[in-house]
Image (cartoon, rainbow, N blue to C red; front, side, top):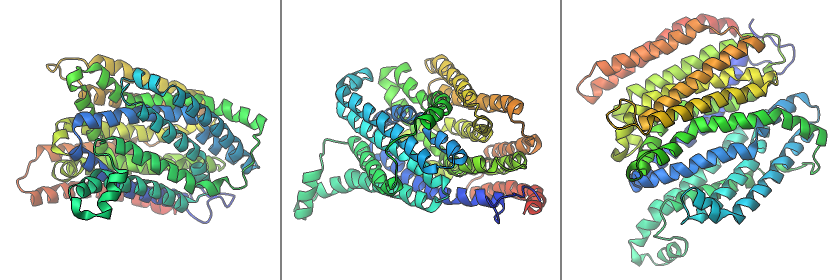
Length: 511
């Protein structure tokens, strides 16, 4: 039987079922939360103009980069040393004190230099944005290790509940400020309710309420995580802290380079395109990027479950076989998600998620979907440098990806409209090439230090089948929504049936 553990780490549950179960729990909160969150995209793309939504996207791009700096690899370091150290409380306390110290320094500096920072990023009129994001980022950074501890303890339900509370508060406040308050102000006869709205709401604010809602949600999340701090030692272990830093420091650079790959295209679009169209182009691109909802939900949920799972599974003699098999099933799921998103894109997904003002960016969606698929495969492959403590390779691979991202964006974004690749289309292709390159490089280097026999036949077979069926869907056009729905569902059934026929014997043999 595949992967029969000697310890009771996974017993009596089959490891595939365990990972799938954990992914499902994390995924449930992610799916529900992201679907609810995408109602906000629906709202934003109808309440705000593309250039206003572009401003929101720019600030969240900066925030993503700073979050990596503020956590500096400590989350992954916690997983690593939580498995190797007997005193797990010492690992938690040491990591948390480090994050508290760095977050306090960050808050002090950003508060003192808020106006200067706002000027640097061309938002001199809004230093309050800098302050709000500083507090939001500090609180989110302090939540990272408590959330990681819940994952390491397999407390997926509590993790999901707190995550859902964060999303619920954020969505509720957005709806309150952007829909409810303007509606109430139109009815002056509503008495006390109208007076309350006048007290808490400023009609001249718009995207400000997006930031305020997120700030309050971050504070609420940190409060809900307070029980994780009970019993915490307020004196770090100096030797352990040094060891954790040595392990995590390369991950900081890997994370920074990764964020360059993930978000800097929006910043570059803002600065490399003509000023009269830059903000709107960022807004359109960012909204269309959100269409990869199902892919990003699954990959995020999978990451939450897989990272602690892979570290725990590394103790078993058949771990490499397990990793290879998990990759097979991962490819099936992400290929199916790619196909499902693309065949239902025109009839359901685009009209539901984003306003018509943003549909011009539709062409980037299949490119970005495939790019995120490559990124998911890279996350699977990257376990080799985390398990072997060669995290410096993670930094080098991400740095190569960042160089590719920056070079291609600087090359393609400014080209005139007579070129095939231009503007946000150039950014989309840069993302595709970046993540594809990182995936290949990680595999080639990983086979030297931590060889795993991945099944390339299944990898290219399932991925190729999804792309082929997508090609069929765009080359056969049918009149009538019902007939298109039946045809596209049939294509999905062909993919699912093929995967079932090939995988049923293998999956049955591992149970």
